[in-house]
Image (cartoon, rainbow, N blue to C red):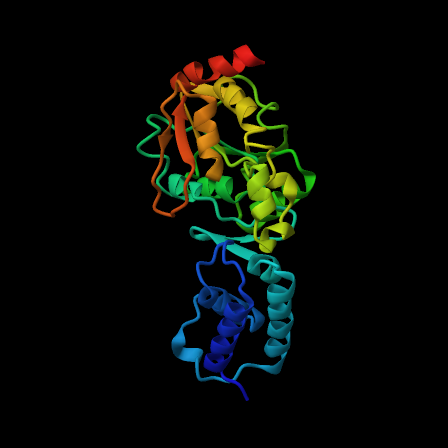
Amino acid sequence: MKTYRQVLIETEQTLINAGVFCGHGYESEHDEAVALVLAAAGLPDNTGAEILDEAVPDAALLQLADWVSKRTGERVPVAYLTGWAWLGPLKFRSDARALVPRSPLMSVVMDGFEPWYHGPLDHVVDVCCGGGSLGLLAAAGLPETKVTLLDIDDDALSLAQENRDLTGLGSVTIAKSDLLTVLPDACCDVVLANPPYVDAQDMADLPPEYRHEPSLALEAGADGLDLVHRLLIDAYRVLHPEGVLFLEVGNSWPALEASYPQFAFCWLELASGGHGVCVINKGELSDLIRPADSKA
């Protein structure tokens, strides 16, 4: 008989010994071990220390052994093993159709886009939505606001549809689109954009865990900005006069600054951590995209 205490300690040590990379929603091997053990046993995520000295069922031990083998040997992210991931207060289905939910834009959504957006909030668009977590999080917090999820990838959109149904947010619109092209002019107040932004060097250096995620959602050319220049132009087109764009570019932020040296980007420090997130209002976009327009 093995207790949960013993199994948690053993699992954590196995993950540490294997040198796994904790970059998909869990901050440490301990957190990953807890998630794996609880999921293998079919226990709620908020299960507490009261179970530590109870025996772990044999079926749970078998499932855990399989998952730990795949986590340490194949480096499959925990969310893809258990099939679930949290972002803020919501739990989402997670599999290889889309990136594991983890965007620091979560903080922007949880704060209701304040203090950067002012006025009535009628329409929020989540572009490159993947499994839909950011837009669905916005819809849950702003039930009177129209939310649209956009992605070019059919697999990602199918996962977003599943998550919309699971979260009970059936009013959210989901559509296939190359960035924002499907939208009419001046139709929305906020654009949330977490496009592919990993540059060629970072792609080459990524830990093996990221190889399980769709490269379409990560890879973005030599400087990580293959899609961003076009996105900036189209965001200007679709935003209302007082609208704002929240853009995540991660490690590609220096390349973005170098591409627009005349513009002072407003980089956000967010409660959920992360970096390379900026906010740009429509008036600023008007100035920002002129060089891009002239190059096109």
